[in-house]
Structures are given as C-alpha cells and as structure tokens.
Amino acid sequence: MPLIHRRAALAALAGALWLTTQPLAAQEASAPGIEITKGFMRASPMVAAAGAGFMTIRSTGAADRLVAFRSPACARPELHTHINENGLMKMRQVEAIEIPAGGEAVLQPGGLHLMFIDLTGPLEDGAMVPVTLVFEKAGEVAITLPVHKAGAMN
Image (cartoon, rainbow, N blue to C red; front, top):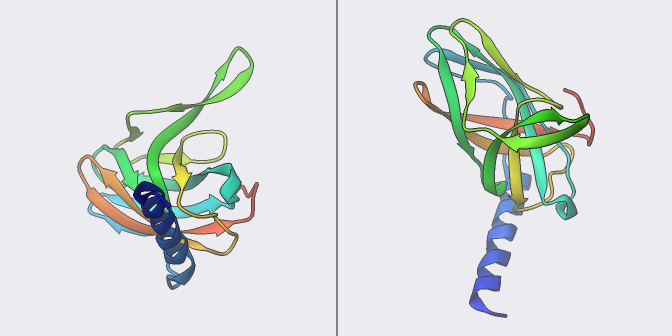
C-alpha cells in the first residue's frame, strides 16, 4: 500500500477510535460573552462522507462572529447555510456566522450549520464528537456534540 494511502487509513482509524472512546460530555459550553446550548449532530454513515452540526449560540455581551471550527471527525470543516435558489434548496459555505450583541444565532437543520466534510469515520447514533469553535472575539471554545439518529431535529 502506498505511503499516502496508509497515512489516510491511519488518520481515518484514529478519528473513528476518537469518536467511540471518549467519555460522555455536555452539549453546552461557554466563554466570556458566549453561551452555547442545544448542540447535536445527525448520524451519518461513512458512505455519506459528510455530516452536520447544530446548536444555539447566544451573546451575553457584545456582538461576535463564529469564523471557523475544527474537529477530529472531519478533514474539511466549513460553516454553511441553506439558500432557496429558484425553488431549490442548496447549501452554501459562508465566511462567518454573526452573533448579534445580546442576541443569538440558531444553527439548525435547513439553515446555518457546521458542515463536517470528509468524515474520518461514521457518525453513529449515541457517539460524542469533540468540536472546537473559533470566534472572532471570544476565541476558541471546546464543546462535545452528541450524535442523534439520522433526521433528528434536536
């Protein structure tokens, strides 16, 4: 097996083991000025190669922006939204997700969400996925998202 394929296989195995061996943790987190609640992901088989994460992000002070995230669950994390283009719903990458001062951004199915592209393993119902959210002002916030069954709305 070529070296590049061995490395990819090892990375996928490490990601799968990480997803299945971590202790259960909360789907809530906070940092100065930010509260995160109702976090979850939907189950996604490996053949899907992508998954989505959802949550509510509330500002307890000044406005902020979610500018990125990372997770061992995927190779290519992106911030996404859904748009209606001539009656057809499509996903689009966004540069950032705005959290208004004293307000909230709701990441939900059919709207804004975290897009986990090139999964390192399947997202199985009951698993816990570590995620680091990167905010413009609040910095990095670690959260662990529970994986719910495919099609879950919360």
